[in-house]
Length: 279
Ligand code: SAM
Image (tube, rainbow, N blue to C red; front, side, top):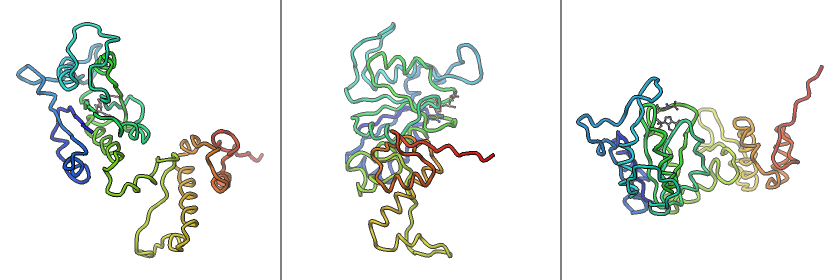
């Protein structure tokens, strides 16, 4: 996979060369290039921002600079007017992604889908963000454009969000992880459940023991314990995820556990049982 990152702080991404991401680049599985947006400016100050149209605080990133940069990276011929309905110009399999706190949440499902594309170009916003016409324009050019938030909070810039997305996407590329099994049983993978808690040796540490069943050697009991714990933790911490489970895919023991946790499991998705109020 080829990844291009455009930022006014490209040095932020220097650490992409360490650990598994570094190894993947050495082996040729990944090719990551960073670009400084200011290289596409023409004024002495290399300015990339301007005041918001309509007033308000802060500055907005200028569409002209972004367009010069993205036209070149995506090999889209520059146009002056409306270009709606034109054929895709970028290499098929390229996705242009803008991190944006006012966008749909990035998810494991999105990461999985993106792990199969040939190329991703990320555009990191700063200040109050990038002029909204930039993603609109490239979508009009037939480019596959996506905007994602990594959480309901506001960061200073898109760099941290892009870093998080790159880690989530690339670890799903076949051959990236030393042990491919380690990504099979994780949170949000398969069923949308939080993972059970993990322990290592010693079995007792500072007076705290691991659950006895984990040292029993009985694999089916261990599997059931972990599955029940995943259901319990998800029910308690992220009930919204339980509501997305397919009841038809639950086995008898799953149903028993969920009923015990206060869920009704006879419809398409589990539903919380209304608590009766004693009068
Ligand atoms: N004015 C924007 C708003 O209130 O929605 C905030 C802009 S933020 C200070 C600057 C840039 O940081 C954004 O353009 C985006 O690239 C990035 N950013 C900030 N928070 C983010 C989040 N939760 N997810 C993804 N990107 C984020």
